[in-house]
Length: 360
Image (cartoon, rainbow, N blue to C red):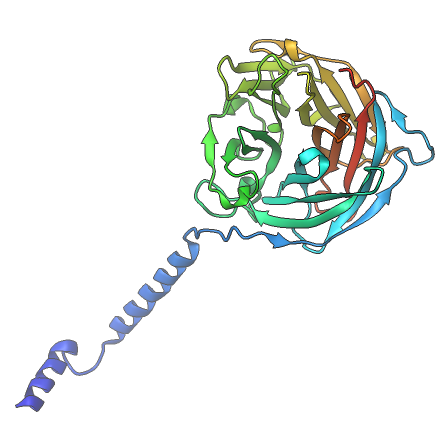
């Protein structure tokens, strides 16, 4: 009887004792599609930081054929070119120097955090990076942004309310990350875009972020400026946001120059880093414009004097990051970094200057 029940169950299972070919094919296709779907589903990224060894080469002179140290309102302190053991160390596009010049936090436009310590000699000149790490920037969906340029194009960084704020260009958005010590471990929140999205041109969007200091007219406010998105009069879109009384304002644009970053001086004036590239024969240049803090308000058109300018006569590259900070002697320093675009023909640079007119 047991044997008969077994045979009956077997026949009920497959009807004939054999699995039809179409059933096998259906099962195989279903298994394949399920596997493909799982592979394409977003997966939480590992937010672990990876150590990166960084080799640095000193840049003792800023002007290639001169011992001169003063350039406009800035005095060259020192700097270096650098390369990392990890191929992800490229495209550094935003920087903030922390703890009186001891540490730094940076972003790359390929979707990574870059952080560590700035090694210095006895005179306080920067000579390299130590304890450096790379870690993926996490998006709103909890996955790493790297590998997808449209999502990963981080261009500007500032510190705000003990958080890191990052502006992205190709897909215009501003994200806020908790825990400045390890922002790569936090899933971000999103701030309302302060400039109308339809006004931001492709690859000419938000390129600069800065936080107004305590000594300014609007302490705690965030400021952003577009790289090359202009209004009908040819002026750059910019905005105050993140605090009451914000709104859009404009920055006067010179035809050859685009904004690449900026930061506030302690007294409230805004330093805007700009660059020009006019092809192989026209060359590359950078400059810094100083905009009076009291002129920055919604509806205003702002401008300011050029306090520093450099060309390929000097040790520059595609400078995209600017950080203002005070050193142990209470002097104002400016640290600049370049974006090498992952090119063999460009360099990663860190350059440091003192502000000569320290009275602001």
